[in-house]
Length: 111
Image (tube, rainbow, N blue to C red):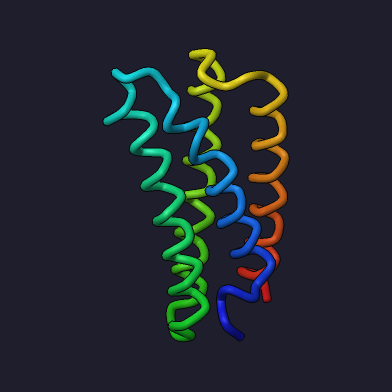
């Protein structure tokens, strides 16, 4: 199956598109720190999902790495909320979506 048709990948990619602009609006001094790290983690997570879909012999390893990156994304968004770069409701929505993606990824790992 093409990775672009997999629901977990689509949801992660859509979440990246949804949070990209707010991440770019972090304060200027965060441009090369928290905002850049968050974008890189998103892209790396999507890349490892892609690898997990295409490299059958190392699927579990790649998907577990994607899951670990997803957990790091949660930390980045908690820091952004703590620093008040994100509103409470927006952060809650992101957290719920990341949790849902994590559950879907966990199901993929177990399959």
